[in-house]
Image 1 (cartoon, rainbow, N blue to C red):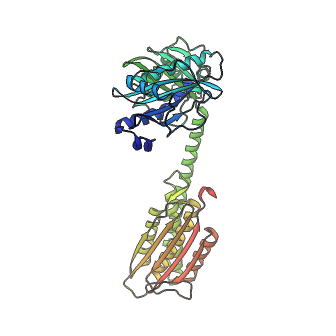
Image 2 (cartoon, rainbow, N blue to C red):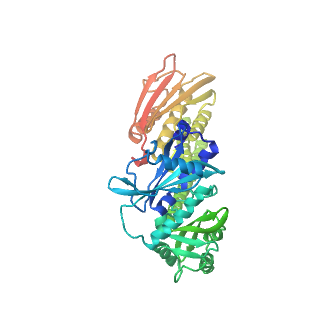
Image 3 (cartoon, rainbow, N blue to C red):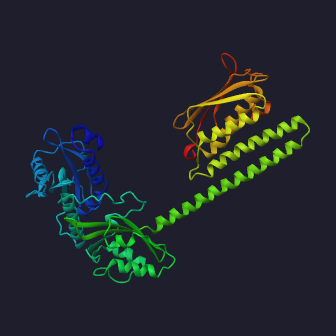
Length: 487
């Protein structure tokens, strides 16, 4: 839509934003009118181009093929031009035949700040040929009111919350028409069922909806009340709210109807979202439980690392002390992964920040007499939790052992980590400018080499290549396939 607006149309940014607001909220109009909607914008060559269209979910469509990006047929062009020029709604006197069915056409000027900037074509399929029901008549009357507001520049409402929480009510879920005082003029069968499930007894027509909802809430003392609810149920503001009573949750959305700035009534859409909200609460509870588990695992691992550190300090045998310190470092790395998981709702870890902390800590701990600089290039991105722990261990092991064994007798050194991420795979290269390979296995202890090889092949299902770096040092290249989505 934005590309079509900028290619062959002269519209200000404010006008373009107004059209975006209209398209973002016009499905309600299409469903109420049982009609296809096509938004035509004037072009520089005195014609029109279709930049958006909507099909009704309540009736048969007119356009089985998309018309976006096309020009109007010759027979429709005069009607569109007349509506744009006069800023009045024009309905064709005779239906236009499209194949085997007739189409009633109507051209509505889209007015913004007193100017007609586009034309909305409302096209109704007349193929059914039956007498409309009371529900359909009320739908169409509500659509006529909103269409008239579009022609006066009073719809859409810039403050309308069209993108709020999931479960937003639609026309087919339930509809009420209110007068200017908030009394119910009409309630669809679905709307009546929604309020009966909420605890309302008897009909709704002729009653003030705000009084009905107030009575319900007074019998639910522990229910939290949305401050916007009175304005919504009276149809005074284009907002959404939810009412909870008797274990039922009802989502409401108000569409105020105005005429030259004066409120004449409202259309209220309602939907029973009890099951949806229950599932959301269950998910929130499960997410909180998972985060708490990760937090407790992190605390337990940090306790284990602290115990290993205390035990290492008591050791008089250097080899035993070194083994305990290595075990402590590995446990601390796993704890760091669980700490990251405890701070997110997803079972994925933002690996870049976490690995930077882990590698910085590993280099500082391992380099007692050598100042080692760690350099990281590229990004790891989001890594699944089941891959994050072994990958963090592998990288920490590589950096630590390169620092410990790759720079004997040297005051400085550099370890470089390069990450190259694709959609599902990850390629990592760890380089150092140290002494190079030892026995063809890398400048590390036998246990470190065994841990890295085992984690890469068994846990990550990847490959690893050890080689001497040109000019001195070691280069370790590993490539793994990430298990995104649990696969």
